[in-house]
Amino acid sequence: MIDLSALNLTEVEEQVVVTEEIPKASFAREKLLEEARKAIEAEGQDRKKEISLVVIGHVDAGKSTLMGRMLYELGRVDEKTRMANERGSNKAGKSSFSWAWSLDGTAEERERGITMDIALQSLSTLHRQITILDAPGHKDFIPNMISGASQADCALLVVDAAIGEFEAGFDRGGQTREHILLVRSLGVSQVIVAVNKLDQVQWSKSRYDEICDFLRPFLVQSGFHPSKTKFAPVAAMQGVNLVTMDQEAGRELRQWYKGSTLVDYLDQLEPPARDIYAPLRIPISNVFKGSSSGTAVSGRLCGGVVQVGESLRVLPGDEIATVKTIEVKEESVPWAVAGMNATLYLISVDSVHLNIGSVLCPPTNLVPLATTFTARIIVFDIQIPITSGASIELFHHSRDVPATVSNLIATLDRASGSIIKKKPRVLTKGTSAEVQITLRTHSLSGPSVARPIPLESFSVNKDMGRILLRRGGETIGAGIVLEIFG
Image (cartoon, rainbow, N blue to C red; front, side, top):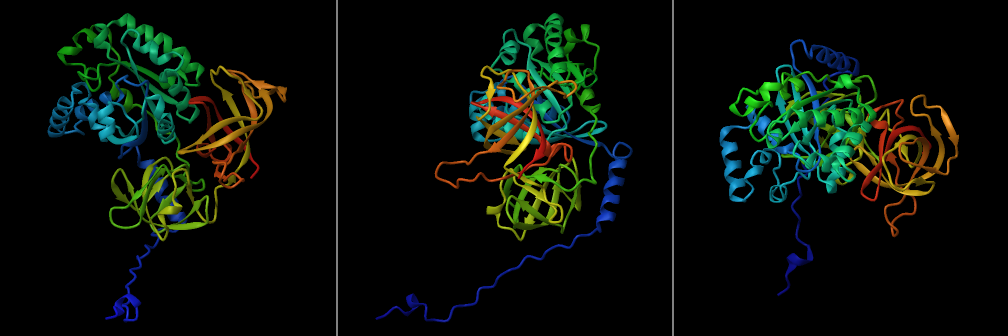
């Protein structure tokens, strides 16, 4: 008996291909820009100003605990969730992490008691709607922290006031110093310092003053203006001076501290100017499967506006995707503008063409692709000088690629930018210089030509023109893109 079905001779039922209906764009470009301009002007009048905040600091300074407690104090975490987190952390023998569990959601983060990825949360103060990026403090996860900081407008630096702990975070190898330099290099200009765990030093005013006096000159040296730097003493576990210091636990603090609470300082943060007239640029920071259909990508708009129904080019590559829906803070919106962290649900594109670090832009105004470019950099506190031909890791938004400092063009005066010396032999710590950077291939067996990455000169787009250089697990410099050579 021959099995005819195996020979495929029988008629095959026609497969029905479901084509997704492509949404139409609602606004002509001029009308869309007008709508966006009105909405931005309305911010602060009848709507809260929107701001994104990256929380930084050395591992174990209490960043996640502080944010978890603050979300609870502001009513963003309900009593039921708080009880569940407390029970779960007690059961896991990690009772001190119960507040952090509001942000550290993965099993591994809870198991190890550290933040590894960027946790997105939002909270509302009297005049601000704040998106929180809780960045990892652990040295192993600096790339994730860079990705978070590149999406932020402002920073909240959490330092541990305990004797020896603050010093450990600030010494070489500690993350406090590196995080401050990183966020400033990535364009963050406002920072609030929360001096945490003051209860562990008996609410000592002299310890608080010592830490502030130590940090102030370093923040100025890193490029933060004193008027954009605020300090607040807090105890995150007890919730003292986060939203109020009326608790019994805050009695000793009230005797000498007359400044604002942490929430009051957050409420005064100023959103940066949003360039809606610039060409649209959305560096992808995350790619995931959409709940219904298509693929979702998230990222921060570095200029321009995007609307539902718009076609976008994915670079590198020659794919074009259509925006099916846009979400901002889990709410569906018809459009999003520069400065917003948005999630775009895309159709008409295969997810294999969407990668973290790729950039979405209009087909009529493409972002340049670069393998070689010049940059002005500042060299951080490094032990081994940078020489011509030095291998580095180049970070740009959520992308990191192998590269070479192919040419040392000149050392520059940090204040005026004028040339001090042409063709220097090496770059040492604290130097400002103009260099040429060339991308390298990822692997020995792969293609011999390096793949270009989407970049823009700093003069054209500030957010797209910032870079970081790392080597051997430490950040050695940061800078801005001057000119792209293809």
